[in-house]
Length: 353
Image (cartoon, rainbow, N blue to C red; front, side, top):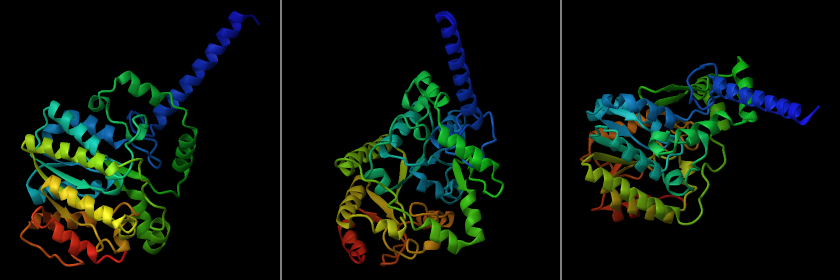
């Protein structure tokens, strides 16, 4: 075999290999970036950022308010928020969302001519303020290239050419397993995803589910350096943007599961909380140890509460700031700059850690 024949065979094999990889990525569509095949319905590591941004490019006229935050914010029902607060809400919650990404989205929305009358901004101390920034090359958390400014050429080829054997194997295994529950349901028209498999497991045996899902490792990893300071500065930019654009906003401190909350450094948390109140002008606090956060039946896992908790939060906010339960077990306090220091001393001082 001469060199010319060898090269020809080599390039044919390489071409076939690339064609197979591209075909598998398009057909399995693990990240839901293609939309050609709906075969993969049980194992989905969908990039909800991309899907929502792509949808809003042509449907933003249908909305005038947004819920923007991490995956926890997904469980604040956009339709209920619309009913209670009088705006047309869309859930812009995305997995592992960071403050800098929220600012990036707001800038993009302004450039696209979105009409934004109100924003609900649920905040996480752990994921949004303590962890490192999201890696820009992680496929399941990449922003739509129109939002990030990344070229389409640098965005799509790495996705279609990725040899992702472990995910392919899991996709095939789970989708051919008739006993395995459907993984996710995603409704792009509202921005919400639903844990179909978890709800099915809870319905079969809530006690068994709790033993398996709530006894997990620490749900976050602290980043390098003073991440809190960096992200507080970013929060100032987000709030400054909302004020400059005359957009009303509601800031929520999420109701972390009690076990998760007790992993925090309490003194650092109190300092962070006070700074957030001062930056935003006021927050709705649902964190701490209360009747909701200590109820293990109200959580999917150490990070995510169930839908009924999100409904309670929205209804509490709709009641308004005139209602101030202010007891140790209260769920939902309005805290502004006029009394944040006394609130921190009283509300967080009684915690048993």
